[in-house]
Image 1 (cartoon, rainbow, N blue to C red):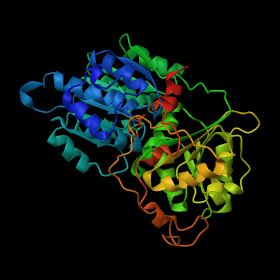
Image 2: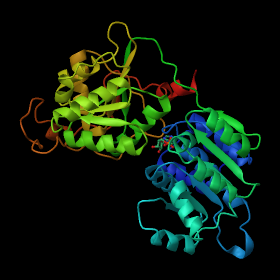
Image 3: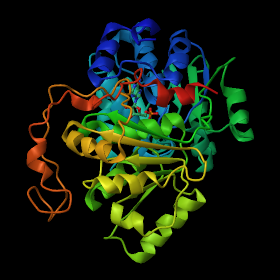
Image 4: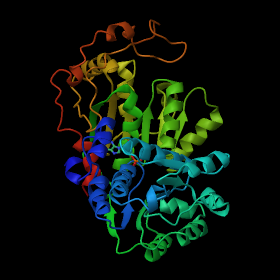
Length: 437
Ligand code: AMP
């Protein structure tokens, strides 16, 4: 199934392909045609499933197809409500990204920042407004926003908005909107309150759901996902979200890298904590306890920090970067699937790390299957670069693992597949698990 077959217009297909996506995710496959038909949607989907593009793409198309209200004056025709600033900012980025070839304008408003620049932007005219409920009502109070022309309303992460006590604000906003609008409600869970809210709001909604992951019961599987370095973070969020992994240990090569990765996961709506030598003992103990209790889904660790912690038998271990020392790979993946428990160890490998991968395959005396996730195919024009091993440990330093920096430089870049390693049928193994079940 391709994006083309979903009936999206050329400008949107172009934006999607520039972003590098080739295959719609399950939620996109289901939701896009229904939204294009004008249906209301009740969507059960978490962050990471691709839901943002799932509603943004057809929303943009609907706006292009419906006539602008009176004599070309811009009016807010689509409103997206989100629980947090971060999510609001992220959704608006997606609107900009997917709409970049269309003559539509969008802006984002949330609290905690000055209101005047937002007023100015609203005055200039926007078609799509992404907002958190509280600040939106401030604008309503100041009459700096007019919601009477809204044709499409999106409630994103509705359950979180209710958890955060926004129900009254939401109801106030709803009272200002036309009854004829199309409404798209997304929520990870469907509590009684969500059902109550949707009953009065949605008109014969289509239920769109991404099934929960049904874990395979084999032993540990090892896999390499070839991916460009600068797309690893995005891919990791996508894998965690679309497969609905709840407990993932991620290995990072450097402390700084661990911090940055943790921040980026949190930004993507995935709870995460970092554990490494620069953290106080208290912080490390807390991170570990939160991870074990399920309060945080992802623990990002450096090798040294991970060695001192007593966790194993985890369902998922991810090598965000391969270790410099091949033996560390064996220690890392030993954290998963012991004693007959199922487990999955995957490595995100960029062109710079092919030499490290070869060393590992030599050590374990087998090739690890390669699986390119659709939409994350490595760019063949990118050449291998020396691996940055963090501050004070630069290229040429003589750490165990040798001076790989220089030997990497001349790696043949098409050798992701290793010796006899097969490239499995693109991408479906990982994402398919959320599709199955
Ligand atoms: P979301 O659930 O909307 O937060 O999306 C999660 C991540 O998946 C984001 O980083 C998106 O950029 C990425 N993504 C969305 N749709 C696709 C797709 N069809 N193929 C590959 N990646 C995608």
